[in-house]
Length: 370
Image (cartoon, rainbow, N blue to C red; front, side, top):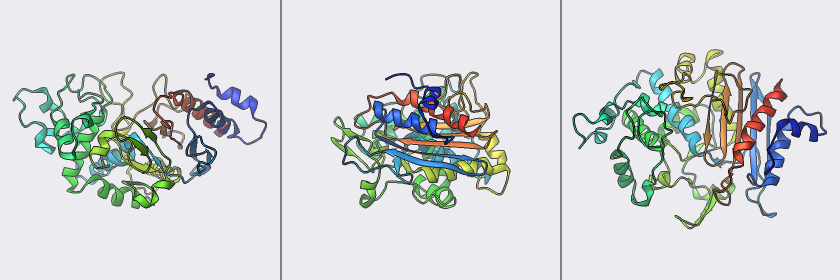
């Protein structure tokens, strides 16, 4: 695939629409096979300035066309739109101290460990900052066939580094964080966030475990030929989350562009008007954490030297990616948010072209905003 450059897209687009170069990048991405379709939206100046959709659910001519409101498996956007959002609200309400040790929230994490086991020092802050020392990804689903077995396997994972000394993006860390938050609220993550976050913000399409009768209206993730041996559509793609019943701290959420823009607006407007999130909380959770050089804030990522957000998002930006090909970036300084949802894993997970598409698309959007 030729390198995607937003300047090339601008030169090849003959329309006066300020977002035409950004949309052209997405059209080219579809033609190159980066993904079969996508939905996108931009929030700026206190309102949605553009929403749209291109392509289909799959590459077949008969495939349903993607619409702006099409629901996608947003994969690791779950980490911010559900798990981190829950942590933020619980901190605001005085129900959560993120410096609480994980073993106090989930005693099973330290059961059987020695008195001097370094895992005893892990805090919820470490999990949010991805510096707990836990491994990045483990195929727990290969041997753990039930939710209890998978959680038990996660609880028994050994650390690969001292807490706070290494930034390692960790799915197991967020599985455990989700369980810790459930211990605090006394409810499962899906029910609590459904009421306190999604319903509160009018995110009517956002949910865990979509009902079977609406799955055909959700963009499919992949043709799974190695684990479930079927088309994955309307059920979580992530295998560990699937074994956990579809609800997990690291993955499992389904959403669409309008809902995620509502969520982003609540983050942006925290200081300008009454919002679900307090300004002080957004400021706290958007600060980079140890070790030095890590781009990770609390739950959120921030722009790095080579970032999926491109070159035009300010240092005061937060965002996150999803393995399925989704992304959310919020510039707190410019009050701009950009959502891009794709199923880049269709029909399989081989394509990495999304890595070129995201920064080029974001740069073109920000150029269009001026």
